[in-house]
Length: 290
Image 1 (cartoon, one colour):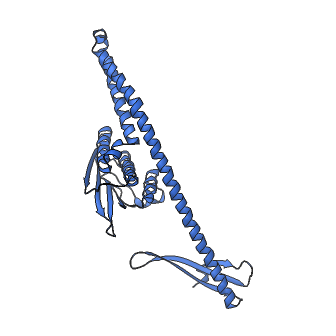
Image 2 (cartoon, rainbow, N blue to C red):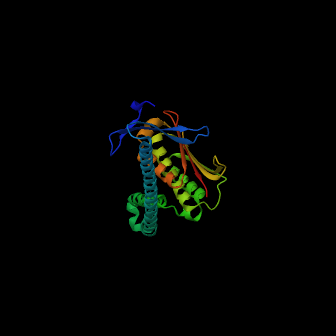
Image 3 (cartoon, rainbow, N blue to C red):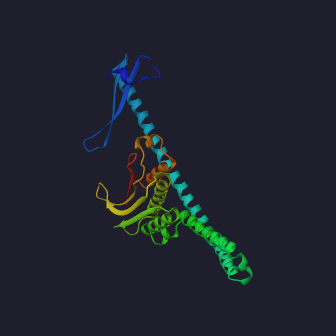
């Protein structure tokens, strides 16, 4: 090994010993990552002292890796708790919008409709009609916001039905064609996985509506088998819009992509992105079922 290519570590107590270490990763024939550590010693110590020093360095490094792993586990647990709290708050706000604001707006619309039928207001029929239409649109918007915050259908009818309703509503409100299909979707999907895939679909479809310039977005949910043959769920969101450079996006990912990746990590999911300028975008998500 060339010492110029390695990290130099001086002995903390004895300047007679210097240790050169070099670590690197490689892939085995099966594709698994393998860690390698090589080194050489420039020393005036006895071999036994040098061996003990090398063992000490390796122990310290292993301890550091263990601490990093524990830190990552704590971070994932905290992220899960934050997302759960966010979902509870979404549920509360959606319930209040539905029970309070939507009902009040519906009552105003009904009163305006009655006023339009009275003879005394015939002269103002045109103005009342315009106000009536505005209130009806407001009621529609509030219902859509409440549904986006926390779709009750997700709890009562499951992920496949919730995505169908979402795609239909998003298409109607945004004026964009969104084609949805579901195939071989199993029953009794864990709630955490349902919420994760629903939020990812919201994020991905929302990005396509805002940025792709595509006339069509396709959303597909299906039951699949992963590489190990275990039952899994596959979610695909594809558009035929302007696309983007993947490497550039990976170097500086937007908040939408970061949110998708963080949610998938909590359920040990896998994300594949296929895109290129002028060739549309395709997101493929796979989550193993317990």
